Each structure stands twice: as structure tokens, then as C-alpha cells.
Amino acid sequence: MTKKIEAIIREEKLSDVKEALYKIGIIGMNVAEIRGHGREGGIELLGRSGAYKVDLLPKMQLSVVLSDHNVEKAVKTICEAARTGEPGDGMIFIYPVEDVIRIRTGERGRDALHYADDIDERRGELAGEVNGRAK
Image (cartoon, rainbow, N blue to C red; front, top):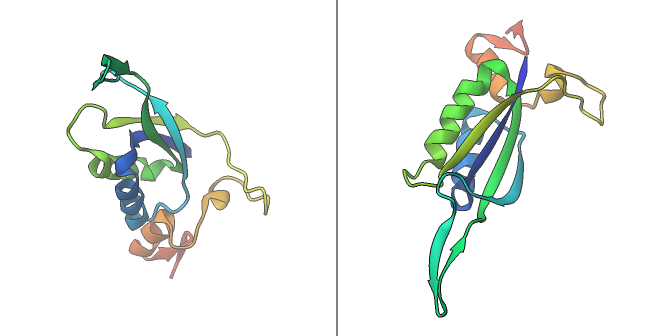
């Protein structure tokens, strides 16, 4: 029913990824500044006193919860927008989400995830529907 995409990307690619997700109708997201490294293990820098290793590099963590049928489109969009072709472009993790509750209204599941003009609404409009009903 619902999945959480957690993407760890370069700081400088955040605007590109956000803009690309907005274009396909992904409206709700969370972003956090994090530090870490992957296979590359960090970078080595040269300073006045010699070389030193920085192994916890600044990254951005983007989290999006969406319907199963939107996962592949969102993953493809993130990959295209975040890719530089260099080591350290990031990773995407996909998790199952058991339930979603909007605190303000008490809505649960798909209703809690709905935003006006979001990817599900656009998908329905393309199929001649709005909110699962024929136009």
C-alpha cells in the first residue's frame, strides 16, 4: 500500500531533486542534514600540517512516503536529478510503511497522504478520474 523512500544525496543536488519531485507531483517530503560516507570512506584533504582524512561528509537525507505504484517513478526521478557520475552521489532505501495518520484530522492511510495536485491526483486525472471517481 505505502512505501517510504529515503534518499541520501549530495548537498548541492537537493534543489535539483526537490524541483524534479515537485514536477511529477511529489509534494510532501522531509529533509535533514546528515553526515556520513559510503564505499569511498570519505576524502583526503591536504592542509598546512599535511594530509588528513574527512570520513563523515555532509549529505542531505530526503524522506518521502507515497503509494506503492508511485515508487519507481519517484526513484527514477531522484536518480536522474541527483546523479553526477562521481563517487558519493548517494543511496536510496525503500521501506514498507504500515500506516500513516495525519495528526490534525485523524485521517489514515491513503487519505492522510493526499495533497491537492499530488502525483496520485494527477495520475487519476490522466485516467479520467479525480480521487478515484470518474470526472
